[in-house]
Image (tube, rainbow, N blue to C red):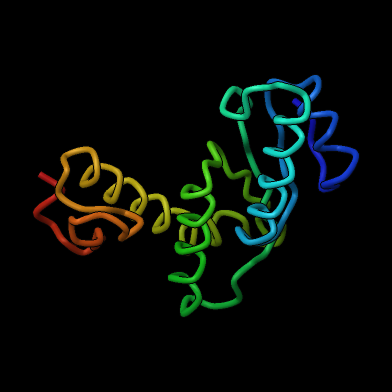
Length: 142
């Protein structure tokens, strides 16, 4: 695994040598830019882009419970980009409370959407013919 935030040098090294990478970026949009660069470097190297495991480090911290939905959308954004794992850096002063307030609800939402998508009941990204997954829809939890 090679980790870092540089789209020029670091990602060239990933395309040439690594079986995994950890991208450091606060938001999915920044990761999307880096993944596009990685895809180009893989093409240059004759390497299969899909063969590289992609993870990200997230260090942006919502300040209040009203931002929980934004955090959940950001995690869904990483997943939609093909990020296998998001490593979340919590605020050091109150990590357990932060996890309960933000990470646990986001994980539950993602799990619910994935179950619904596997059953063909909904589309997490809202791009297909099925309705967009609604984490509050208990019909998919059975």
